[in-house]
Amino acid sequence: MKHPVRTLSILALMGAAIPAVHAVSVKDEAEGLSVSLKLNVQARVSLYNKADNATGGSFDPIRGQNGRAEEARFDERRVRFGTSFKYGDNWAGQMIIRSDNQDRVAGFAKDSESTQNRNLQLYYAYIQRIDKIGDSVTGTISMGLQKAFHSESATSSSTFLFPSDSICKQLADGGQARNPGLGYLVSAPFLNVGVDLQNNSTGVKDADAQSRKNGMFYSGRIEIAPGADWMIAKRTESFAGKEGQGLVLGFDYQVDEGITNGNNQAAAANGAITDAANGTYNYVSNTQFGPDLLFHWNQITAVAEFREKSAKTQANNTTSVVSNNTVKGQFWDVQVAYAIPVSGVFIEPAIRYSKIDNVKSSTVAGAVTSEKSTYGSGPDNGGSGNQWDIGVNCYWNGHAIKTQLAYQHWTAEDGSGKADIVRLQQQINF
Image (cartoon, rainbow, N blue to C red; front, side, top):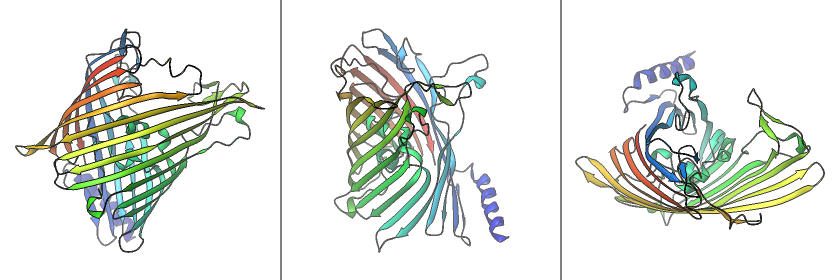
């Protein structure tokens, strides 16, 4: 009975370790087991929140609808808690729960606690086996609920340069990129190559699809550096003033294939998706790909990203194809920051420019020329148009404790749409 007793002792000791940020890892050398607590909280307020829609009327960028937003809207951008473990030299894993973006848009009633959707959600639950392949190469196989190996998962959101995601990482952080599945990663001194096979972005299968199969999610990523001295072991959008050098070129390719969506689906009273079986369904495949570059030179960090996204929709009835449509979007951003030491902390001015084009081309007649944009491509970025982010970060203890302040200005590609938002965010992460 020694094994259960030691394991329970570790879990009990973890409770005593919570108050001290520097004492959140517990080891049992006899068992070869180490367990660490993981915690990430990002408290944020969006200020000013002034926007116009495509025709020049008032627009609410918080809720993505016409009208005026509050001058200040508080939310919890990240609330994540869990554990990671290692067992011996070959086994590892994580179990993380989350409750992200709480109170960003929900309405308040007299009893506000009961009206907010503050539910916890399982975020990670996976196990890894790590093996050496020669002297300097490792292979890692993972199974469970995890993110595919892509630009957003390779760079933790706790290390982002701005309170808001970059547009390219926002694309990568779709539901199709974090599902139960199997992945394999090969890591060498100047090269990382990973592939993933997961469930696609829905388990719902339209009844009218009959014998047509629901598809899968496939992805692959490669990262390469000029040499081992330039390889960045852990990607980050800022090194918070840390001395060193790095240059890594990455390339992503992802396919969320064969989603069989009903044209007449609706949410039933119990929350399940139902279909009126009207004889038609959509067969959808989404693809995104593109390169990214990460550069680090002492106090300077720079990131450049490009992504092209394609959505193919085939409308079907029970006997034939009714229509085929393809919409392609193109997105890129570049950002740079310089961390300055000031009285024991680092102050880091930063700037980012983003180009967003949700409908670069389309087989739907008039879709490109008629596009008029409003702010609403996602919770952190506008629709098709140009976007500037200017900010300053204060690193009290690297990314473990940092304060971020940023101003975002977005103008639409077409029409009168524009938005101005100021975000203040405080993070603790360990």
